Structure formats: structure tokens, C-alpha cells
Length: 116
Length: 116
Image: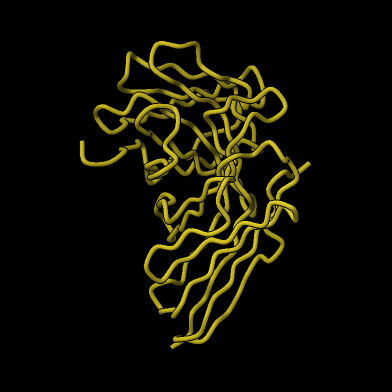
């Protein structure tokens, strides 16, 4: 059973517009959430994180919103640029069904395409 | 080193053979993680090493999988009697301590394993 879900496998956005990537989770014990970006043939790179005690974290063009009651988080990219085209993974940390508190649980990813 | 280094970058092996994948974490990073990404799937946690503590092996899919880490340096992931379903990109990551939350994990570029 997936505990971190990214229901949109792909998203296409025009350059300059906002990209909104969504993520849902099922385990209320998750206490930290992260977004990673992955280009082909490279490992994922850390983008931004948010603690469960916050509802928003902003870093430049990237903002992550957390809605704990809905168990939902989203990543907003404004304005979107062609170089943002990549696969974006949502990840969550927490003690999950016997797992360690150290490891992250990842979603399947959303492929973002930003068109010039 | 400057980043997480994984070798080989690509490995094609025959079904039933053993393979060994290597990861060199960032110097000083006490935590090391192995994940794998099968085609169309998210990142699947395999194993986590934190300093001298016993590793968290809760993600290893079968007893054909094992991993070792020498102190706080190199780690090897061994897959015995490989099966076609083992085909995936195997990603190694390291972080300062077992948290890596403010800056996330640093991932290597992965080893693409193909079992034929």
C-alpha cells in the first residue's frame, strides 16, 4: 500500500506560468516532507523541505505548502522555466510500520515539462 | 569526495549470477542509504546505515540482498542469484547524521542493473 502518493504521472506547463505538483500521504506519523528533483541519468537532488509543524516554506521560486488535516502537500514553482523540466519526487519521513525513522518514503514521481 | 560516487554506472548480468554494487559516500557523512527505482516506480527503500549502529534492513526484498558498510565509508550492495525483477536503478545516498532533513540526502547517479 502506497503511503506517499503522487497521482499525476506528468504535468505540462507553459514557461512563466505556475507549476503545481501535488502529493498525498496516508500516515499521520510522518513529521517531515521533502521534494526532490531528478534529471535523466542523474540521482535525485534535494529541492525543499517542510516540517509538519509548519504549513508553508518558501525558497526562491519554490514554495511547499502542507495541509495536515488533508494529508496533502504541494510544490509551487513560480515562474516556471524550461530548466525546471524534470521528474519531481515527494518524500516523507517518519516511523512507519517498523521502519527506521531515518529513511524516507518516496512517491512515484511527477514528470514536469515546461514548454518555452 | 565532492559527491556520492557509485560504480559501476551500468551493469548487465545473466539471471542467476551474483552482482556487487559499490557506493562511496561523501566524506564525513555518517548515514548511508540504498534505494532502488524500478521502471515506472518510485524510490524503494532498501537499507540504511547510521554510524556504528546496526543497519536497518527492513526494506531488503529478499535474503538474496545484503549490504555491508566499512566504518563510515564505502558500502557494497550484493544481490545473489539475480532475477529479472531485480532490474532497476540502484541509488545510494548519504547524509550528515540520520536526519538529512534540512538539506536532504545527497544521491549518487545510480547503478543501472539489467538482468537478462
